[in-house]
Amino acid sequence: MKIKKNFSNISYKYSNLKNSNIVIIPVPYDYTQTWKKGAKYGPNAFFNASNYIELYDIETDYEVYKKGIFVTPYIKTNSNSSEEMVKKVYYITKKFLSKKKFITLIGGDHSISIGSIRAFGEKYSDISILHMDAHADLRPIYNGNPYNHACSMHEASKKHSLIQVGIRSMDIIEKNFIQKKNILYMHNIFNCNNDSWIDDIINKLSYNVFISIDIDVFDPSIAPATGTPEPGGLDWYTSLKLFKNVFNIKNVVGFDIVELLPHKNEFRTDFLAVKLFYKLLSYKFY
Image (cartoon, rainbow, N blue to C red; front, side, top):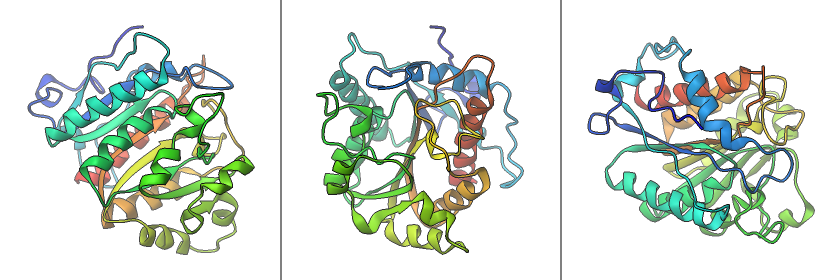
């Protein structure tokens, strides 16, 4: 696997660790995926697509890459052990949090979020998790593994305020673990005639927020390259409206983007992931 060394071929001035405010942790892991595998190629597809993004953001009138974007070495495991992967993600996230960097992660399947949320939760006792996904991911164990991607939010639900947005598929067992006042199903968003649902989400979040974004929260018409695409997802500008409000009002301390599963001859999801990443950074720092 060819390893990409930096984001969008930005110069060393803006990609070395010392000068960078932003850190990307790539985690090419997909062993727990239960349908189509291939999310381990997500980080490479992400960085390849980053070569084609315009580094000036029109909406914010800002070039956020000048805040510095450092890419860590890819996190790899010596086996397929998801527990080992979660521990590695936890320790590397904790390491860069101690350096006072803004941490982002690129997956990989959603199980990578268990380790990063664990690290953020130790640093910020009042943190809430904004979970953007088509699936609830609240199973305590799946296929005999508590670190499966279908369990990615279970630990978080036990420790933190977990606000879930865009959910439209779940197993009945997950109803036992939902924070009932903190979940907004996709059909509720669709049936809302105004933006009051965004205000509702903002009011549920604590001041410090970590955002976990599964690509399948988007409608597959704009983001088909993911492991378990679900019809009826969010569109681009509706999502940005929510994200912009969250960044403007709350203190977003980090985020991840997961479940990008690149397809041959289909690049729009790769580019959407990069555009989303850069847009979120623009909202954070402009």
